Figure 1 (cartoon, rainbow, N blue to C red):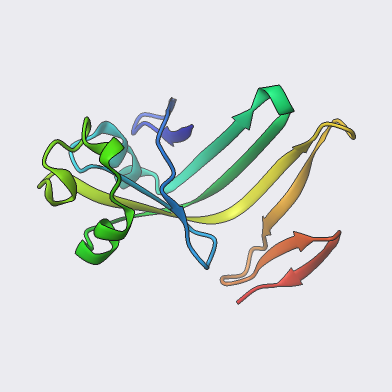
Figure 2 (figure 1 turned 90 degrees about the vertical axis):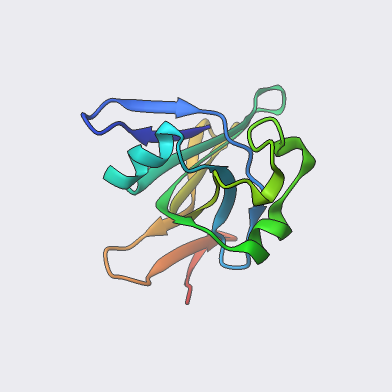
Length: 141
């Protein structure tokens, strides 16, 4: 689920298929330029994402900064026929845009411990995201 903030403040959730996680950990989506979420992201670039598999008690939450892009090569890489109901003219649909979310923070639910565990935490300095692995944080970038 993608959560955006409407211009007057309320939060709005909707499903959106993640098409890729790139080498930098950014998540990629494809959507239409005229969708309400694009207008909401123009006003508030930060979004929240959640992924879940309730049967196996797997939950992940992430937040990040959005970028709206047009890139023919990347659109070709990400295009899936399952997107055609929303983009009837395919990746060349004039409405098609790419949505990139650069993750600042992420957590997952630890069912055994009954708590959220940080995966990525954002420090307040630019370019200082800490990725937690094996319990030890490390500097990225």
